[in-house]
Length: 512
Image 1 (tube, helix red, strand yellow):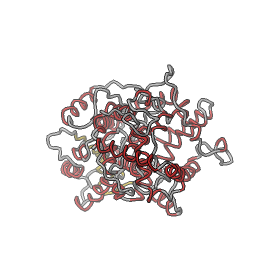
Image 2 (cartoon, helix red, strand yellow; image 1 turned 90 degrees about the vertical axis):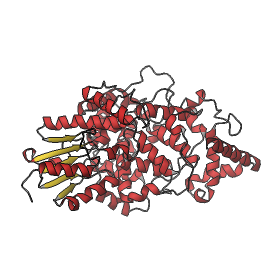
Image 3 (tube, one colour; image 1 turned 60 degrees about the vertical axis):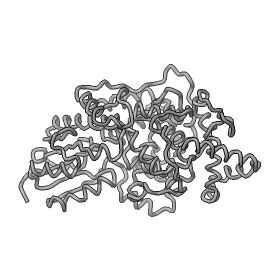
Image 4 (cartoon, rainbow, N blue to C red; image 1 turned 180 degrees about the vertical axis):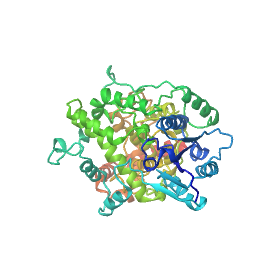
């Protein structure tokens, strides 16, 4: 063993200055290694803006670490000797620095975890992999929680996280307001015109970001997405500015309208903070504590504070737990045996279905769509059309700036597509056009009639929904939460059922 420094690789979603591997190290006796590698940009064809955001944020984070006194060895994507992989770049760093050991914070994905696990054998030096304690719930804690239950329902996990953090609890340990969950208050359609609607900050690219944008435009020209609308924060300070914008201007109405959708309004009252939380620029617990403080100061209604906190310490932590608990084969599940190819318009946004054109179009422009657009527009269509879950999973992982496999895969495989057979969600989130019409103004601008099930101008969601119900009857009819749809299907006249399925088949044939 040499007497060289510690080598501390920092990955692209570990942009936190006190990440676990750094806390055990001495700045005077360590080399921080940051690597832009081709493998991470092309294992799926990520959105151009997603790649640009991560690379720019990494380069700015390196400067932040240097300002804090760390020695940073940074390898850019276009460096002439770049090996293109984490292992290749660690090998080159070992040649440069002759480290006595490697300390690294655990990877967020199974794919990268296997890479880190191989290093000690490959390099014949000690490798310590530290648990990522930026999350509230450890792997062991989630496994223990899951083992004690027949069904892993998020609501009960969320309550445990509330108890663990003390967020929105009374002095007696009861939920603030007497309820754990105020989701029923958070389903209002947004007003078509609201002059007070907030807008996220559009950050002007600095020299570092501009260089990254040019690199991405040249190297990833065949990837989905536009760089013309690039707006992301790429530093901790910028992320804090957007955090303040959300807390001051959007959070007080976020709860009411968190499920709403409006034409040409991609952001509404949403925080636009998930890319920064998932990359490590913002602390999720600190953010939730500030949301709670705003509620206790009378600045934010309870349903808004609770709805936001539930997304972070409830849903975000829960899907991470499911991802690691279920193992790397989770993404191959296909309980409904769906096999249809994902339609081409998912990459172009070119479709007469206005809701899909809106959700996909803004995804192409911004690398962003909010959770209801993902679940009830793009996800719902893929579900009721019988689309291959793996193809849908890859698409979601590609197109969203906040998408890492640990958070994206359970949301897609489990929540949107029911491909895990009900492990994550108690029923499929399938819906016809009526739901979209209720929660948006999309249908008023569509060439299809949301009230029609059959005919050339009938909303495709309507026939596809009932076709989904019919073709999955053997699998889903025994689900208590699906009893009403199946009763309604059986009440239809036989000729109406036949016409509905014929309408769906004609649309799907045309789609193919």
